[in-house]
Length: 127
Image (cartoon, rainbow, N blue to C red; front, side, top):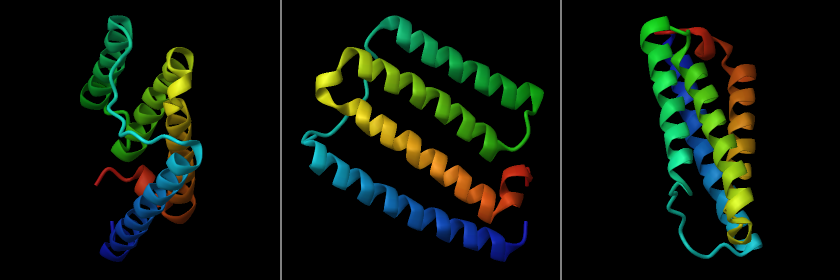
């Protein structure tokens, strides 16, 4: 990967993180989420499912070599975030944390779409 592409990608990622933090701050103020958020599973089953998804992901990366780490990690994070959004919405709707998970899911999708359009080589190179 050429160094100028990697520098541009890192700069883009840095500014995207700043943008995401600003959007999350604004959303917390608008929705009225005052406290910090510490994620804890609601049941032992949810914890086992999340650990199972993590184990499958690690096994696929190590043994099957499923391709680009960047792309596969994005898919893993998306699956976990969808699961957590649904659980938060179902069991703790009044705390409004499911809105933050939904925001994170949207920002993640926007980030990957932007990277795909601006830096297509990053998604497919394993260097």
